[in-house]
Amino acid sequence: RFEGITMAPPDPILGVSEAFKADTNEMKLNLGVGAYRTEELQPYVLNVVKKAENLMLERGDNKEYLPIEGLAAFNKATAELLFGAGHPVIKEQRVATIQGLSGTGSLRLAAALIERYFPGAKVVISSPTWGNHKNIFNDAKVPWSEYRYYDPKTIGLDFEGMIADIKEAPEGSFILLHGCAHNPTGIDPTPEQWVKIADVIQEKNHIPFFDVAYQGFASGSLDEDAASVRLFAERGMEFFVAQSYSKNLGLYAERIGAINVVCSSADAATRVKSQLKRIARPMYSNPPVHGARIVANVVGDATMFSEWKAEMEMMAGRIKTVRQELYDSLVSKDKSGKDWSFILKQIGMFSFTGLNKTQSDNMTNKWHVYMTKDGRISLAGLSLAKCEYLADAIIDSYHN
Ligand code: PMP
Image 1 (cartoon, rainbow, N blue to C red):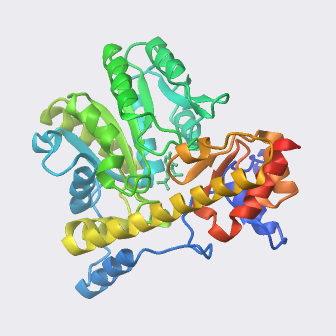
Image 2 (tube, rainbow, N blue to C red):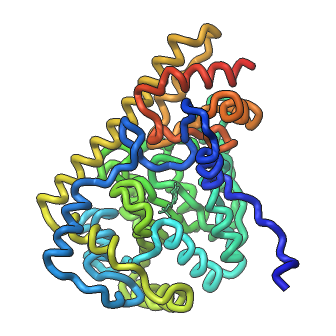
Image 3 (cartoon, rainbow, N blue to C red):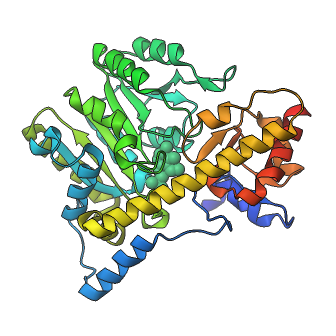
């Protein structure tokens, strides 16, 4: 009976890594998946993570099941990191937080809640967005549509289009927003633009749905990267925030994150939390403990917390340095007079190069540079030593 099952297409992001592995050329470069690498292009485990893990061994922490909602100390820490300790939404106990299977699993829980309690409501996502968003909502049977975001003419934000499309969406839609470091474009609204986005969302009784996958990793500051979310919290709005510790603590494979639902009362938050638990129980029963303990230990200890911030600044700093170096190489090598300044305006681990599918294919087929076909490159997988080579590849692909 399994004979009838057809082949599924490869994943557009994770499939890039598979193709990279199969390439034997020594100049090959994997700029596909968004994972931090050192200047030597090796994976990096944060020192503070090793410290937190040692602490667990010393304490003899056990492996008993967590409750469905996850580790209490983690849930407290993650909400405080997001909103700031002592924020009114926390003091008033208006946030329902449960531990999720990283950003993806947390988004999926929220999608299931939407499907059950807001039947027919649409999620409106940016065009383009992280490739998995559409999969997640399709899988949860939540209808979605897109708002304009990227303007290919300026390789910048189509702010007018974005506002018009959010206004146009049926009242009470969920508006998916990237908290910081928009994936794949690296283009974020300015603080002034965020205020206008909040205005139209409020006007139309929409419900914001933040995806925060890069807190502290974009600017190097946890507070700065949470400014968009906090702006909405200050307005007393109800909204979702999915969080991930894959990038900022380098815990990719630990699958640690959370879904936060900011409600208008403590009572509503209690009820929402009970329903999130009901969704989680038949899906995976309860979440893994290891990553949750790492986060709780790091955030709960003043010394480790400041060490984490220093390592995050170091990682964000390395990415900013290669971004500058790539720009400098492009400007010095390209004789066409093209304006490359868009690269410096983007933030976070990605750069949207503006290369189309054919040009991206040229990057891979001729230059052995692996990247997603939408023209996105991960600067976290780039070293200073490889910037000139990459600039040659980009210039060749643009002009041929
Ligand atoms: N959202 C966005 C925008 C992302 O870029 C990512 C990671 N690529 C995620 C969510 C989720 O990643 P994870 O499931 O590893 O937390």
